[in-house]
Amino acid sequence: MVREILKDVFYIGYVDWEVRNFHGYSTHKGSSYNAYLVKSGSDYILIDTVKRPYFHYYLDKIKTVCDPKDIKYFIMNHIEPDHSGSFPLILPYLPNAQIIASTKGVEILEQHYHEEVSAEKFKEIRAVKEGDTLDAGNGKVFTFVPIPMIHWPDSMVSFMSDEKGPNVLFSNDAFGQHFATSKYWDDENGFTEIMWEAEKYYANILLHLSKLIAKTIPAVEALPIDVICPSHGVGWKKHIPDIVQAYKKWSSGRIDGNSVVIVYDSMWESTAKIAKAL
Image 1: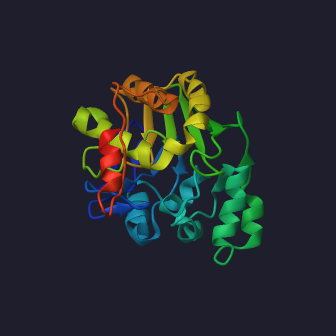
Image 2: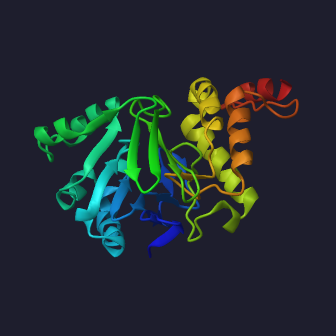
């Protein structure tokens, strides 16, 4: 089912109810591979793709909203296969679309898909740097902010300011959760549950990048964001201050209370005695 999550913004991703392992950690509540289609007058802007096995669902959703030939811009925020896997499959349906990615994103797209996509096509991709913009018409302007190593070298976010509607941050992996739900927005789901999944996601995917994230958060806070649309899990509308403050806390290294976790493995119980003594 295609859902118009905001005026002129359509959710065309895939909710994966069955996945139980992602990058080696438990996803007992599933996940989603979020992608979006934005309408601007008679034109459309496509943002990201889905994992390759779910391409036909993705294509069907696009066709429900528009003729793919009417897609004028195709933004790739991140080239990891759960977001770019359908990239070579969708291209034949987008003869009129300008592809946009970070400079590193263009490079990694070619590394991943050079056997399926012509070299000439990669040369046509617009490589953007920090602060570059795209006037998509009808009052919609995209500003691109590369966030390298959060958590791949190619990663970037796309901020859409809209004269007629809410300003949207398409944040890719940032602020995401591995959480399958038929209800897209944060205020349609249990707050405690989604914050727990967001914290778990941060701990397993982003924690080792905390110093970089701490430096990036002020740039996010400076944007007049009304909603955040990540690439996994629910979108943030009501609880944006909560998730941003949580990221500030998690990236700072601060902990609550006076306790620490001691992890140990003991064959003959000697190490266990030391751990318990500590």
